[in-house]
Length: 513
Image (tube, rainbow, N blue to C red; front, side):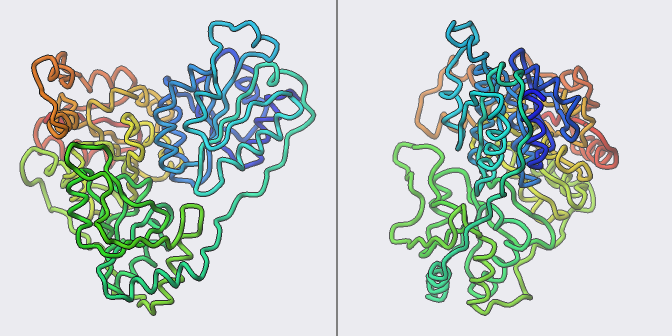
């Protein structure tokens, strides 16, 4: 057994079942070990940003890490944007990054770089293994580190000789961390705040936005009249008919301020106080109202679900009459050919249990409104704001949940960042339907240009225009093995989306707006 085999078996022992990979020379012994160590599914991505985005999507749906396999510092650097998003989502990810052999590092070969320096900003744990005998133990520590609550990126750097030299054996899995209990005092403080009669809101994140956490939050809302809120880009949110209704905070700072203006007490459950995404001249960065009291019921590493249940019991909250979304979708095609009409069509045909990866950007509002009363589903959002996450995230979710339909809603500009994800969807025959909102523009940046008060002449506007030449999404998808169709009317889109929901495997629908 060599070091690579001992590491791979250790990952399998620790319930890491998938490796999203884009390897190179220094990782070849790990690649070779895939055929000798059963239990690991390799999934190839043609760009490292796809690899890391898939690992994020997989983690959000399973709650456990996949591995990535990346080639040296440049390969890791190519994946940093979606590792940033994974960090913001608190997704557990185990990065395996190859390095030059230990004795070769003194020569400063062309691909040599500061891998630790690349890894540190997006990783909660970084370690460079120095011997084949220690590699398996390092791998076990990496998995445990990734699973430290609420979840984080762990990066293990593996020099090539550490992978090929003889090792003794694999390591057993280390204990999986469990959430810390919330102190009784925190529950008592939150109960006092909600009994005060002052306008209050719960701001929820993490497991509090799923299953039993949502039910407990709904009980609290029913008992106290408090509002239930979540971040604009929550990592995973259960929505739709029969689910407790949660308000998503708006994106723009002034809208966020208005939304929170009446809140006098904000109770945080796995969340942090809301702030503006960017600084704008004359607009607030801190968006909670002056004089608003903030109480932490549960920090991100604590058991927010149990805390909500304890709080609901302390308040004598009912188990019936919760604020649940009704099932309300249109009977047929209706409205204008725009994001709102498309949203109604998506909601009408979305099957129960679907997963929606949303990076539609300026076209997100229409689908979000319509999907609020669609069949129950999960929504995965662009947590870190680094665009190009939607398609890889959808692919990772499809690997994690092969029995569930995945729908990716994406703007055309952001989709070009990681268009290679379509190739992996085709190769793995993932059940993902991608909807491209083709407005031929970085529309969000046109909005931001005005909001920051910057002047816009022809040169500036040309930097935000992606319509010259026009992107042909049907050709792009077909070139990577994806069945695709262009639609230019609501009737055509509705028919195409309905057909995709009846079929299995990857599809793409270009909606030309």
